[in-house]
Length: 202
Image (cartoon, rainbow, N blue to C red):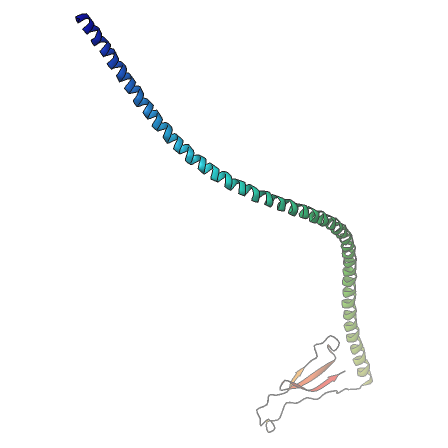
């Protein structure tokens, strides 16, 4: 009996250890189950999120497809416009080349005309100088002839206002000579209060 009792105690102890191991395994299984359930819930939520994103992505893909078709049509139209503009650019470039040639020719003609105008201006200035010198010589010769003839010329007599006639405080008359080129040295002007009252050219 004692031997059987010891054997039973030994078996009982082994069974107790086995039960403890089984309980530990059961606890581990429960924990694994809870983790699996949590992971399942997480995956379910992610699946729902991904499904929603897939649905939105499908809509976005459809919109993008429509936009891509519109963009392709726009690109085709713009390509046609680009080809037209390139043709117009080629024509404008050709016209610009002709215009450059014409501008160069016009510039050459302008430079030639400028040189001609400059030469004419120099000749005109020289001619005016010769006219003035000739006029001085004419006057000098004319005066010499008159002096040789004994003739005295009086072409203008000027006197200031008398004191009794200057009752209004008027300024005295001023004698000036014409300053224009065609009349230079050929006469005098008598001014009274800024107004021309007498002019004589010889």
